[in-house]
Length: 211
Image 1: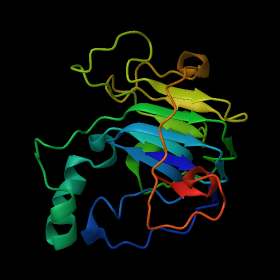
Image 2: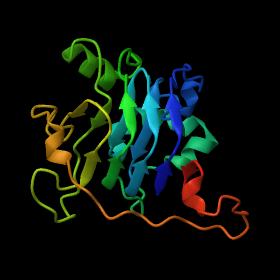
Image 3: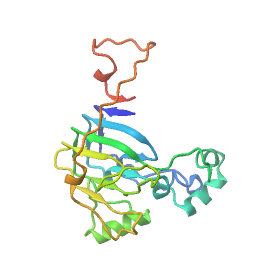
């Protein structure tokens, strides 16, 4: 998936989903881009600023959808279908994600206190959160080694701050050094939709959006 040339700024409207919608109710207010349980993502040319909880959130499925939250989803037909537990076809890890050449700043200034993990981290960090949060969860079967085995690449994103909060290690070994994630991945190909008339002369990459 490619996400490019978007304005994701001040997305701070309170989450109005009822508690019965479980994981949807627990999406943090003030989140810019939420990257959960997916691989092969490229985000570039975006302006991501002023989102009060976090500008970019890179997480495993269970980081975003805790067990107790899954239980509340049972009261809604919609969330029963979306968040079906123990589906072996579902891949919960995030990997091979590249955020490059984005304007990322001003996030995490007033994190959503409804979300326990956000509240705890903000308290530990003096009240705020960095622009980019990554839970550090890695698929042991993936096979890649080193300091960045999930291939999370973060380069040229203005002065964005960063934290790998080490969810797998109970937050005992957090990493703030972005240099460990200064890698590159091959650019993903754009998706061409024949039914959509291209008036730019440059194909799908000219417009804002995702594909």
